[in-house]
Image (cartoon, rainbow, N blue to C red; front, side):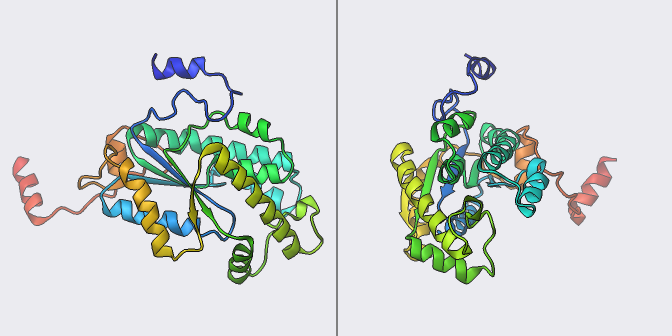
Length: 278
C-alpha cells in the first residue's frame, strides 16, 4: 500500500498512537516533555548542538509557534477570552500546521526533528483544565508517534523555585488562573503545576515516555539523553559539507525553515576556473 493509499484509508478521529505511518519514515522524531522549570528546553538545545557537530541534518520545532494561529493566541491571552476548550482547539490547530508543514516533510527527507513539546503537552495541560482525555487522543490522531519521547521529571518545589526566580511575573493562563484555582497567582500556579505532574505520571505509564531525573546536573542529564539518542542515528541524513537548508533542499524538502542559501563569494581559483569556462 502506498503512502497516499494509507493516508486515504486512515480515518481522522482514530485514537492517537494508531497512525499507519508510525515508524515508517527515514528521519527520527525526538521530543522532550516536562512541566515548566524542568530544564527540558536546555537539554534539547544541547542535544541539537551536539547533533549539528556530528554533521547531522537537524530541524527544530516548538510548541505554539505556528504563524497561522500565533496572532489569535496572543489576542486571546491578552484579552483573557480563552476557555479551556477554545485554548485546546487553538493549540491543536497550531500543532497540525507544524506537523504537516515542518515535521512530516523533514521526517520523509531523513532529518532529525527535535520537538520542544509534542502531543503530550496538550494531553497534560488540557486534561488538567478539565478537557476530556479520550477526546484529546482523538483530536491528535493525525500525529505520528515519536522515535524517542523524553520526560524530564522535576519535583513541584524545584519547578516553582526555578520559575519564580527566573521570571518577573507569571502569566494568567500559565498560572492556571483561568480555572479559578486561587485568587493568588503563585498559589494558582502551584496547584496547576501539581495537576500537570499527575497527568504526566499517567502519560508516562500509558505511552512509555522515557523519564529523566531533572534534578541531576545538566551535564549528567545530557549524557543520558545522548545515550538514548545515539542508537537512532545510523541512517539519518548528513550535511556532507552543505548547510542544513541546502541539504534539505537537495532532498526536495521545502518549508519555512528552508531558505535559499546565501550566495558564497568565489575563491580566486574558482573565479579563474569560471572565467576559463566562458
